[in-house]
Amino acid sequence: MSYEKFSAGNAAMLLIDHQVGTMSWVKSIPLEELKRNTLLLAKTARILKLPVVLTSSMEDHAQGPLLSELGQILPDAFAARIRRVGIVNAMDDENFAAAVKATGRKKLIIAGVTNDVCTVFPALSLVREGFEVQVVADAGGSPSRIGDGMALRRMEHGGVTLTSTNQLVAELVGNWTTPEGTQVVQVVMEALQA
Image (cartoon, rainbow, N blue to C red; front, side, top):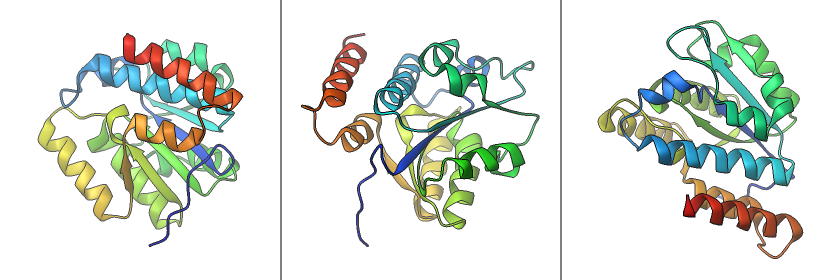
């Protein structure tokens, strides 16, 4: 198996259902860590000018609104977010699928809440469609550790590469001494000290 680095020039980021209610259901990772990692991904994407697609499910129900911080960090993506109405697999939503394909990227970074419902199905669907997918495991979570573990194993067995926030950020940056790399280092240090 060959390795080709994910970079700002060849990848897009999909942030799925990072909603206030949905995130409160996660017990496999502390909420503060989940939120910190998600916002670090969003800030890195902004600095590196990575295409980002945001989606939410049933914001006016128990899932709640998308994190307001995402609107501050990625205002255009937030305004253009795909609001699904009960569709579990985001790739089954024609608007989300079209937005993903419109990025023109074949390498996709996915983080979602919950991993055992909202992340696993689109990740597997995208691999089946020929995309190379990395799931950022610690920018998502599930209501139980066993549920999270099962979802991560299922994705990995299905051809998804699992990664962590810090690992993915370092891969995307590639060189901390570039102007963008220097900005990302600052964001990482702020996140680690929070």
